[in-house]
Length: 123
Image (tube, rainbow, N blue to C red; front, side, top):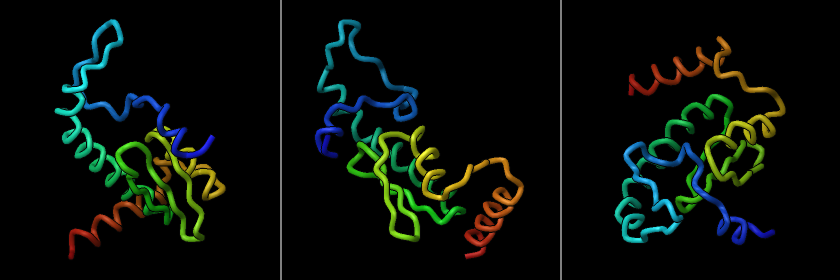
């Protein structure tokens, strides 16, 4: 399946839904005007999540980019890239790119994040 067709059949992951969003009708009917009204806030929330996850992944020299509000693109310094559909898959793909298990509670990792945060606040 090509990337475009794959994108057409993806449902929103729970991590992509804002807490104030109201579900669609019980019968599964999607109220298009409600989705249009929520789109701007959904994209802003998604962009902020992508930015925060990108800061974390930066400690592993991996970048994260939002792709048209529907997927994310991960890239490593070697030029490898992967398209992922939700934040749950991002960590898994990042582990594949680095070839190791990424432990968010690793003391060296936390020290790296603290160092990067200190450098940003000194700018």
